[in-house]
Image 1: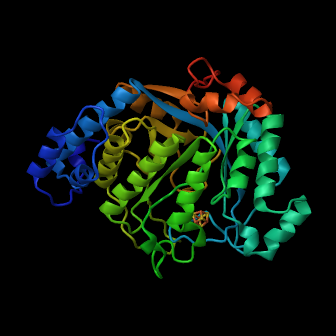
Image 2: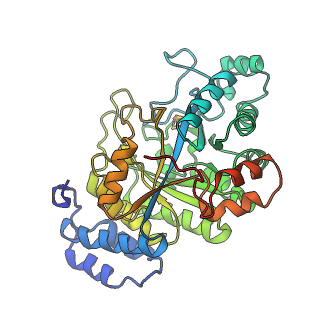
Image 3: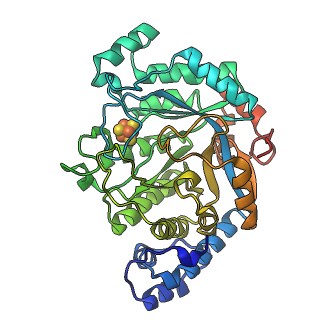
Length: 403
Ligand code: SF4
């Protein structure tokens, strides 16, 4: 797909962007005002913006784009929140409502192990037992007090019984729960999504989503920082936020990372419309909008790992690689993307070809990025042993499976 086919430019004079690009200091993070100029750049300026972002990525991690070979474990799709863009969540009475049993967790993990996976990604709804008595019954039957207690036990099960490394995404966490999950997983994640609390208003994307209060999410990310826990976060674009909000969200992430140094990965995820969601008639961010956001994220965060999910931007894989990402995120050769089931992951061989077409080598990483491995292995125990066994000298997957 040629870049010239990607339309979308917001109106903006070329001269403002050209001057912002000309003012870029090599390797220095750009300012809020420069980011605002660049994210609004005209189509004619997009190639120069992408070139600047790619050059910045190459200064940070040259010649390579990584991915994590994973299995996706939707531990429970019950959730007490009702985000307007979500197709994952269910009420207990909805078709497809399901909480995985320990046997199901282990069976999927072992199948992934056979296929060379190194990450067990736990995705789940936020605190469903607070809203649904059915979930409280399920947890009682399983022998756990809460969804987080069950998640902790399943992370431990994965560690004990397989070579996979857990990476949980359970929603908001207290400092105590961050510590407990950090004992059984080398990294964890929580998407900040946006710092705009106006999206909690009636009719907006986070109407009836009590766990999406930006201040609460920032607190969880900060608590992880205080404990030096490798943490994945990111923004979700196209859910009603402004371009200023996107920049401010990236700056909030940058500020937390400057203070604690623990944010191992920033995901730039684009909203994709689905027929069954409350936001079924909302416009999606255009490919050009996504590329501008990724490129500006790279320039704002020149020394941080930036990921964009390839399945949500197909067929623009090569353009994303040009926009400054250094990671494709978790890709599964086994399980579908349960969050966006209508957008299958690209076949890994195809992703390798697209990556190489842009001059990069595709390498398999672990759920925890190489530069954070020593913070985990410095503590004794099973987690440390498993991580040492899984990592090579570069901190990537010791046993890389052919794409
Ligand atoms: S996006 Fe997450 S928090 Fe929101 S409804 Fe879906 S599962 Fe729940």
